[in-house]
Length: 483
Ligand code: GLN
Image (cartoon, rainbow, N blue to C red; front, side, top):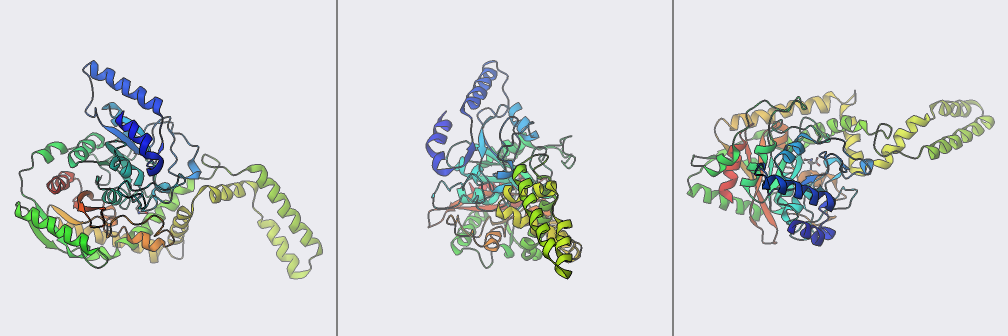
């Protein structure tokens, strides 16, 4: 109930939650209370969860912050949602995000931008900006986001909360709207590493509904965090502390590392030589996968549909105009006009084009164009195939490093949260924000962002720990030592 009050008082400005149904929340709360009274309640009693608007909750809106899906409602629960419900978590509302999870600032949203609770002139980060801001503002105590190239870790860092991206395939993607299927991961935001461990423990595992989900035993992560007595070898990659990193963030993380060292952790300098290709490789492969995944929004099967009557009228007028031309044209002009007449859209293909033109925002269109380009016959080898090879090299960098260390440390982002609007006209600048996060998705490994301190500008700074596949315990352990 304090959460409900916080939503009512703070959400109008923060805009972290885009859909919220008080009656359904109260009904859930009373059902959970009944289970508590009967002594049969689940592991997640007390968890008040915001859900990124890209994960299906039966009977709830699922907009992905897109006009394309603005009227769409889920007809089933994602596997993670089923699991949360089974363990008696309270699902409080749908969280704002960048459209189809494409962005680093939550500004690409049909619902308007979410704002950073620490300073509302700043972005909360993205794409899971609403999920991070909701926890930071106290509208819920945990939330779910998705991380394709950093979308959990970067907003966690900007909002001063914990954000965990599990290993690829650790958590079922059934019911997660696809952006880039070989990268997408669902994971939690929380106020503490322990809460992230508990959430992960409850959402992870093999799922018959997602063939790509891994059949690897789910550890007791909470236990691993609470009973950490072991040694910790932390790899420090020089490539992640170079140019472009804010000096104060560098110093802050170095200080925290010295602290860990004095408490017994071992710091090991390592190299991840292919890091510099991370962003380019990510944006080639992720846009390629996105262009294919987003082909399904055609306005016919579902999604925003342009007005068919208007289309028929338009086509009628265009046809008439060309026919007029044909009557008076001669020679090559006539041929050209006749050709145009045969190429005129059919009503259905015009419906498809127009629905997509109206339904998608500009960043999504940019990604579809980029992705279609890198997959096109003439450029496939130069871009897509090449990027796949580099992805392999980046993965090998990590494999080599993890032979020597338990976790790898880096800043989560090169700066603190930036001003709303400041990067919006410059997509490349926006993409550069993902410099420390995309490599984990390319390699499929796990990563966590934990608050490391407050910058002199008053904004939170996050530190990232990366761990080998299925070694979430290690990064949780490392994160706990920073808290
Ligand atoms: N900022 C990255 C992008 O725009 C990452 C997005 C994500 O992880 N969903 O693609």
